[in-house]
Length: 538
Image 1 (cartoon, rainbow, N blue to C red):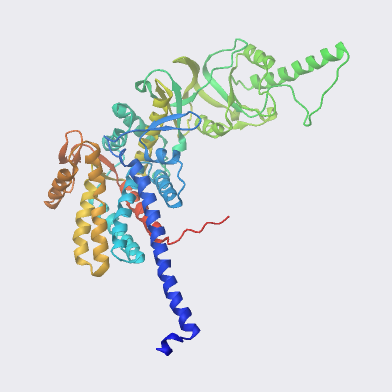
Image 2: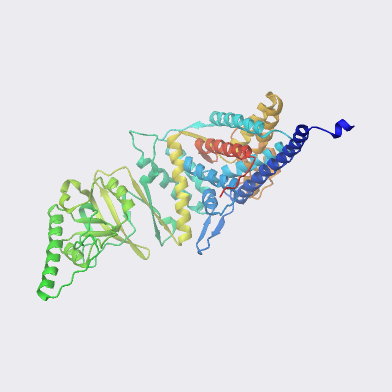
């Protein structure tokens, strides 16, 4: 007994370490649980906006700006998320937006469901590393299943491209205009595909110009350029030019200023006259040089240091019958020169005819309560296109732009990876079924984890049915049954409120959207599972 009481100091320290490590584990579990709960809260926030019958969110900022949308990436971007693990879900939807452009809500809902099932595995005493490794194997297997389900597509099959763009638009606020916007998105992307690099599409070559007035029905695809500006006709210059020779200039047609800030005092009228005369001659000299090349349309870049044009220079340009569009943004110059197939001119001395662009018509058009400038019939036009989006109010125009961007991304996905897959929850149920069968072949803990995660994938069809006001349990059970009988394309038809062959209903999406959703969601969940402590640093 005495021996037990007089334990040596090292053993006492060891036992105290043991108790400490136990407390530590509790803390780790708490941190992990807090992370999972925070991330799930973010996923639940966007869950109701999944699918064609999903609800929209109204986002009000402190400055009074209001946005109405059901695009997952937009909702999460505008949310103020403070918890670090929850921020990972915001980044997750952003990376899905970059990789595929569509499926931003799906990927977050999927990650939320995987986290919920991870929590039940962790509470059953399975180690996070085991759960994480099982999830990795599951994602590889799931992508393989998706590839086997996919249907190859040819880019000449315009109908299939339009169907997949329409499927993307069906869940948006502007879904009633999908018959107009879907073909527009397909034509826009196909017109910018470079035959030399057929699998690369740069969406910066599709410019979206928003103009208030009219309805979304008035949206049009313009083969050329559109400027949301009026022609500068202060001095009665032309507003319509045929057989235009267009110059994009980056210098100012105004009297020069000194490089340093200084004032010049003129005490004599004759000197003052001389200054004004010199200014006139300087500007006139510039205008004559411009006119000598045959140029009759000027696009002038916005200037910070001094006025790009003055009333005097506008007067001379109008006399020379030159149409002027001023205040062209610096970041638009690259797009404009690519479209017009011309070079920007940085100095009047370099103003030569070989740097000009040619077009059949440049005109000012009245649109709604404003005016725009249209350049059409461009000679040797670059691979770009412009979409003029119209709408009755700013909220509708902004949402139409976001929806159109998603549709463009969907077509871009199909150009990059030419496979289609059924929508309507069909791929998720098929993955869930096949992974459930695969789990029975595995051994030990891994089998248990895979079975749990296979069930987690059912959240997508469940949520689709729930948002459409159907009975989710009955629908998902029926869906499982149909897939077990070998109907791999059976999915939820939310319009009819029943289960049909979703490929025949033309509800299709690119394979890339589904595969990137699975890989990104599992990657994000694995990262959250591996975190066992949050350390605050100053």
